Amino acid sequence: MSVEAAPVPGKAGAPKIKASDRSQDERRLGWKLVAPAVIMMLLVTA
Image 1 (cartoon, one colour):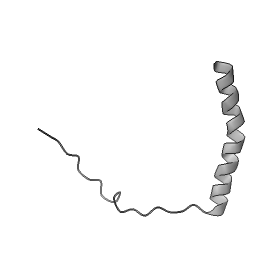
Image 2 (cartoon, helix red, strand yellow):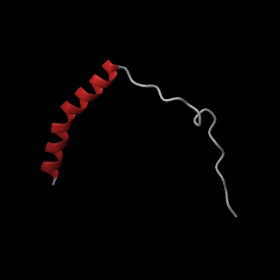
Image 3 (cartoon, helix red, strand yellow):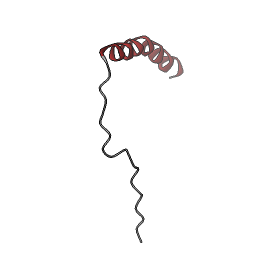
């Protein structure tokens, strides 16, 4: 006996929205600021 999940309406054909240049730059800056802290936390806990 197999059970199939019902499709979620609105998810299948939803177009992907490209982020603006400003949004991409802010995300990149965030990763640049967070990355050193993450690396230090990994080194300290290891």
